[in-house]
Structures are given as structure tokens and as C-alpha cells.
Length: 205
Image (cartoon, rainbow, N blue to C red):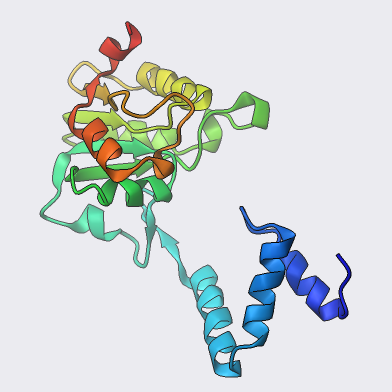
């Protein structure tokens, strides 16, 4: 693509680094910003800068938060005895949109993937084990994507957790194999949460 300006090219290149944004889309976004008032562009750029500088991650569940503890972890309306384990914050947002779950969460910040160089030590697995051992948790739900990496992570977590007094369950297979949680429709995801099955039972199917 030929650009009439090096400044334009640099901006398009940076937008093109965002996931799911190709060069044509990046150009369209940059040209859109160029046509906006300076105040609008300043507001846009400032929001990103403030986000990057001030965002926090809940020290309990590792969800994106404005404070040390997120609103979910501090809510007295949530069931403190259930922890839903997810890959990242996008999955929490997807599950919350179903209005079918009222427990707590734990964000792993990824999945075990040896091919990508991601091992258990790169995730928040130790923190999850600590929560399971030191809080009154009665059930842990594995709400991970139905992929090879997701199944590998679930298998590892099940081995690491002391499940003697904790029920371990996983989403019902309303989520197709190879599917990711954040892209599942709310009805399917909601039913998968409410009809979750014991993890050991899922191994026999």
C-alpha cells in the first residue's frame, strides 16, 4: 500500500499491530481519527494512556480492576464457595453476560501450551492452589476453551488441586471442541454453566 505521508504510514502500522486489524481496517481507523476534532482525538488517546498507567489486576482473582480487589471479589452477593477458572478477563465478561453464574472467578492469564513456550509457572496456577487450600471453597469450575490447550490445562489443574473436599466440575459440552469461551453465544454458554458436570465424568465421554 502506497502512502502519501510517513506520519500516516506510521499510524497505520501501529493500528495494524492490534489483533484482528488488517492494513485496510487500520487505514480506515486512522483516516477516521484524522477527520475528528482535536478534542475528540485527545480524549481517545488520553483514555488509552490513563488505562495503561492506572489499570490494576485484582490481587485475589487477577481480573481487570480499578482497585486492588475487583467488584466481583468484594461483592457480598456473590457465592464465595465457588470459583470459576477462566483463561482471561474476556471469558469473565462473557460468562457474566449470561446471568447464570453468581460465584467468584480465577483468571489463569493463559493456557498451558508447550508449543508456544507457556508452562504452568507462567500462569496463576500457584495462586489458585493457594485459594483452594486456604479458603472455604466447595466447588471449582473449569471454564476453559474446548481446545487441546484447554484440556491439557484442566488435566494439570485437576492433578495439582487437592480435590478431597472440593467438587471439581467442567462446562457441559455445549461448547464445540476447538471453540473459545469468549466467542460462544450467551445461551449456549449459560446452559454450559448451569449444566456443568463433574470433571471425572467428562473424562469418560
